[in-house]
Length: 108
Length: 114
Image (cartoon, rainbow over all chains, first blue to last red; front, side):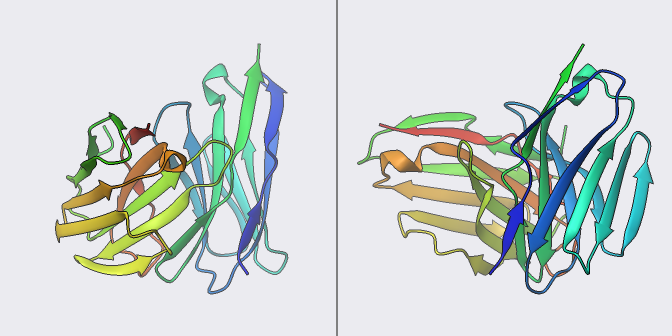
């Protein structure tokens, strides 16, 4: 079957670092995406990993281990505007599977 | 501006009504998608169109009927819906669906079925 697990909620302090984990089971794996979704808004693309390792993009980094079916999104120097849901999604031929999302609250 | 627009943004309809949701993308993409987003549930892929051809119907009830007249426009026709169909309906597009391109989402239509 196909399944994605990520924590429901996380809380962190402004300026801190937070890691959001995602584990997946999927057939025909063709990459892993992270999207950010602010309340009441559309999801927006953050990162894509298809090979093992770390991809860094400014304050955000994403890691993938295909053998372990595991990814994480690392957010550094947290800002209040980072309060949002973070969606992990895997892609295969013609099909995307999303996780339920992790709601991150950044506290002052 | 994500380049993907959806209308209407909010819709309230009775169970016997017929309505349509519209999506338009201005990004030159070839794949378009309909998703359903309910509270505390993952985004559920409903339909995928690649170069105007439907490539995925994710066991969606026939009361939802998609239409893709061209690569820029996507419709979701609704009839005899149930209250449990109340949700946010998101449209998305990508370069194409056969390889892993990022998806661009529209703002969604908040549907309430009474």
